[in-house]
Image (cartoon, rainbow, N blue to C red):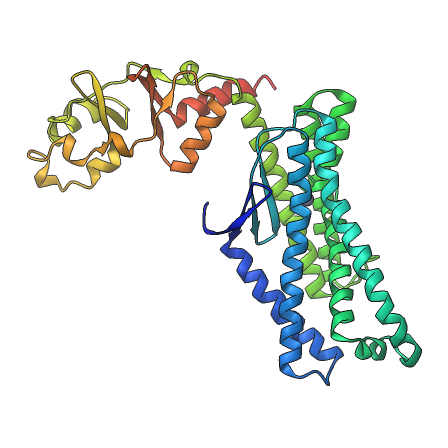
Length: 391
Ligand SMILES: [Zn+2]
């Protein structure tokens, strides 16, 4: 998940940049250089590429401003913000947990698009000054654009992209800002976060399918109001619809899982007294007496009543068959200092995140420095299946 680099801190919030953002950055700069070249044939390559590069950097700053608006409002509402990550589809504020109230959720969300809209209108207004001068001498719109200075060209593009950013984010599809605003309103009315999320997610999926349908219609040559027609535009619209749909389904699932597990202590889900092995046990013994006789895949390794490591089926697979009689568990186990452990009273929702982040199937559970049990992914899944039937 953590692929990218850290840019620095602003207002105590870490700014991270995902590598996928660089791809978008290059694409935008390249496209703009071509676009500017079409409107301004007299511009040399240096001016064209220079203006495109500055425009890309300012676009980056615009997305950052949008995300900072969310994050600063979150902090003002008493919600912790860890970081802001910029990636392929824009920005994500890593805001901790659920907002405390519908009002907080509404405020935290709405400031993002409002910031983009205000920025967009201001920049367009500024560009309008330069545009007015060009309008006197220009005849067709293309000619008018052609006479704009590099600064006005940049402002006009940046202004419209910010307005577009505000409009796109206000599409009422959860998890976009528009979907979150809708959810906060529903939440305020029906006073049930999970149901409000489900309804917002349905609206998101409906909007997504409308996009897909319009995209397909455009591909077949139909004229769609506001979007026009054409193969490329149609594919784009259908793609955005598909992306919205999967994001909507996925984020709803995550929220349901988080809601079910939040506040449930690990103690309730873990397997107490799991089978254990000593570190001097040879691999063949482990296989014959433990792995083959049970359906367990992971064993805490204990010495003098202390947890010293974990051994799993994957560790055993790394040992070649003819070494099974000589190699011991202690030689191939994951040692204690490389293990992630959880406490009996830790929250199951946080623990699931740890399991996912470490990409492991189980975590040893500790109580007062001693092994209390083993929390396996499948225990969590079983709990989710039991609970979600009641939803
Ligand atoms: Zn936003």
